[in-house]
Length: 226
Length: 262
Image (spheres, rainbow over the protein chains, first blue to last red):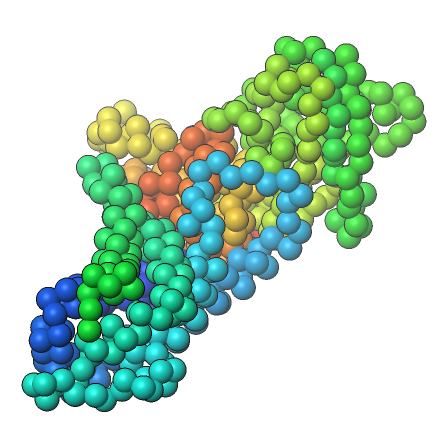
């Protein structure tokens, strides 16, 4: 008797798990961007939001561990499928022309790798404070941790800004194909909704990247100050 | 018209292949691509050289035999046709044309431009059929099928199994082929009783044959001579998910009536 878990060992099964874990991460990225937009409301709002999250340590750590597991699952399956796909064509074409495969869809592994490297840097930089320890654990006037000051300090540095913008480029490219592709993998297809599904990837990618880039550039250009 | 052809030559499946350049002279613009190759081969035979091996049969776009990657696109620059339906007037006079075989691990090269596509037959043997008991012909209109359903099933059934989808796919995946076959049968009442075991068996066979996985790049749809839509890939994914929910314990490989021919 075959077990249900075998169903997800196949190539389509693996892709379904990749799509679900990817969509989970996409939902997080959207809320991450929305939460961070509070930087435009000033230090009080952003630091209050950060304190609000830290007031619920069990929820916070459940979310963190959950996200790490999702990312790990997504990456392991991506590596497995990519290796398999490389084996499927041992001799490459000498002349190759694509008709409608988008640039984003052909560079998913590359944009995913850029995203992973950026993610590691981002966690070490703003979450763990390893890369720039100068402004970690400073408190604001209300006794909250000064996340606002940390972010403003970080994005005044042009190197950090360049790295984050590169990360956003990877994120935008990846999401552009990822969301639409995930919906197709989950079998969502209907004549009335196909245009909506097709537009979902580019639209979500655009909104998330614009929101994030707005924060980075607003601080770098001095529109938002410490 | 005159053309310069870079053609992939390979003596056998274990030999190393390479490109050889040939000149095609006196080509009329009304010649099909395969007729142009016939002319090249005629000259090679007269010179005592080995002609270029390529697969062909009906030469009217329905058998699925012809299989050439022309300037990097399976079945050449026009959409919705097979190589045999491509005419030389489509190319500018004096053009350089590169001709390669389908390239995939599941399609080993037999000779020159001819590849072994029996992997697709083995996927069909795994579940691409309906088990119909023999007996008298069924009365007309016993099974009612709506017009829309019949048309959609026919869209999927128009697959001629040429393998261009595999050739065009970055991952050499056979998803569009399997999707067309699974959708065609799952949409019709005759195919419904076996839909759960069919989708599992055919996808398992696809993985076993060494095809890649789908990247949803839709390149297959763009080269398909029958313009089969990637919507059927969504249908296939849905059928597979359904199979996992409805009967997760069902053995994927049923007693195959074609087992002796494998």
